[in-house]
Image 1 (cartoon, rainbow, N blue to C red):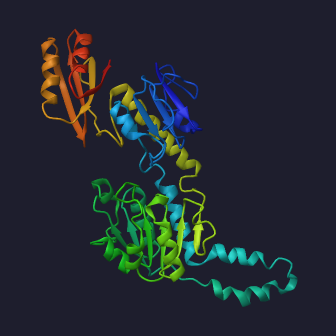
Image 2 (cartoon, rainbow, N blue to C red; image 1 turned 120 degrees about the vertical axis):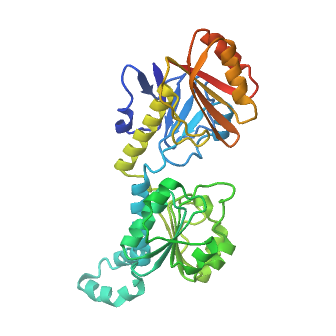
Image 3 (cartoon, one colour; image 1 turned 180 degrees about the horizontal axis):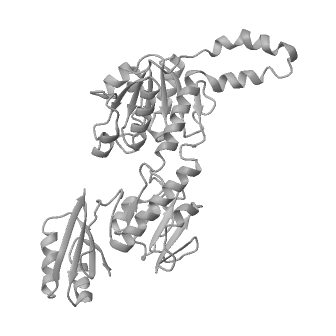
Length: 388
């Protein structure tokens, strides 16, 4: 029986995918085959030797020690796109709220409490200072055209905006989903220069950390409105505050409150509500559960952040999976070892991702235990599994 350790409160809709009698789950499992987690940090815990996979019910994996998992042959999954609609709706809502200065207008209206019959007159007198532009006809720049970016771009276009997208790593799946009306920005600079609104939807990495900085702000159209529902660290806060103070940036709306920006004029800090919908939580948990089921049952990898996607029909009684370094001569060593035990390889798949690789072998024959021991001795092999 496969054992799944749950961390945080996982949606029952997701947990219902685990077949009873074959899988068991709970937050008190000491030697799990897999961990299903939302936001709890795994950086401080000792990863048990039994652990084969970690599934994050969400897109970001900052709470997971990915490199440590890779070195131990632990596959880390995430759930890209499962919360895309929830984030998209919040981004569009934030654009409407910010353009029309609605949060500030609501706060001002509250100050009229106790004015009695004078309230209507005061409203008419004071409302002009909250006037803001309509979205229709304005130019929106979308940085990052993954699942969320594509949905934001398409929806913004349907609202009458002229949308420009920039993503040098655009996937085939994302390309299929983009409206033909979305225009391709040839560079970030070109997107900055033409956009009235800019929304960012890229992952956090050493290359993207602080990427929206003084140089970027200086390239933007004066009075631009910025939206960040990806990761707070993408923006250099000190540079942002200077750009806001000068009027170069009219407003900044983000989903990642921090002490440096709380209370800063023209900054709207939303308390990380991007994926906080019951539908999103159900979708993320369901996708994560299905990823773990496929991996533990069949050795299938889908949506892993540290190992390649790999899927092959089960064509023999026994399947061996090998996680190993992506180095020369590895496949020949693996096949030679299996052949030396008189075992026939019925089918084989090998995929790589950067410095790591994953090999699936469907085999027939005896001496499986000796074969596994031989495979483990090959330099560069990290983990070997037998699936029957």
